[in-house]
Image (cartoon, rainbow over all chains, first blue to last red):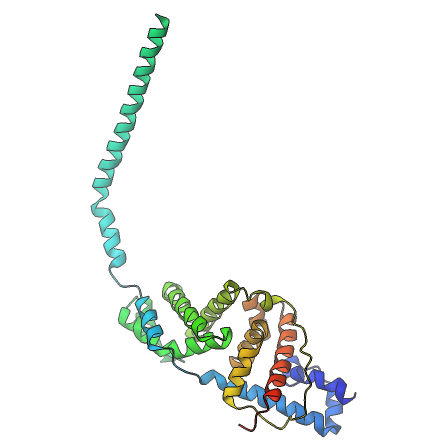
Amino acid sequence: MKCDEIRPLLPSFVEPELRQAGPVDVHLASCEACRSQLQAYRSLLDALAELRDLGEDASEASVRHAIELIPQPGIGTRVAGSIVANRRLYATLAASIGGAAVGATALAIALRRRSTQRVAL
Amino acid sequence: MTDGLVRRELLAACRRGDPEALEELVRLTQRRVFNLALRLVGERHDAEDVMQEAYLRMFRGLGGFREEARFETWMHRIVTNAALNLLRRRGRFGVLVAEDEEMDLPVPDRSDQIAGRDELVRSLELLPAGQRVVVVLKDVYGLSCREIGEELEIEEGAVKVRLHRARKRLREILVLEGDGEV
């Protein structure tokens, strides 16, 4: 294989997981230029791996914002307690609404019967 | 005993919902979270958005976190998912899954030169999002091609192709920047 056939393979060849050995190894054994390119890719991977433990802190504002997202204890409990304490009120309201609905239906039926009787007359 | 970044005791307190423990967790992990987000999305403002999203998911998911798993791996996955979601929302999803065209650039033979760290970071930011995500996850954070494929919901073979192109393009960018030794 020639250099211009080998060079496009080097970005993957640099890593054993992606490597397909064979002709490339044979060429590299005798081509210093391509070995140098391969070494450049290895250096690139080493430099990339170093980035993992480097970097900068997030802004203090971002950190505070993240901390504000922390759920506070007792809020869930307070909400549940509120629901329990008002359960009687909710039941009363539901009954009232239900009662009103029944009453309205009865009135509608009565009015309709009256109307029917008038027509019959 | 520690789980790498986070002590087991702290993690247990966080799982119980202790706000002070959760605050300590944020302060301990913010650098890792922010930098992973920044490497993936390429912009600081977007990285901060990803960070907020990631912590929100962490707080919600801590109750179900299995203690035998590594917290750092779990955290890493949450941040990556949040970053990918942002890239999709920003309309950059297409370049995450589409095949990238080869850059037609001359490549001078400066193979003995290594980029400075700042130039390397800038070069990463210049990559298309789809290539950047793959090379960051693989070459910076050490995920396998299979794991990256699962994150991006693409075939492992597609990951390898994208990784190959990303490394090649990265090297081309660095060489054209004309940088010297580290």
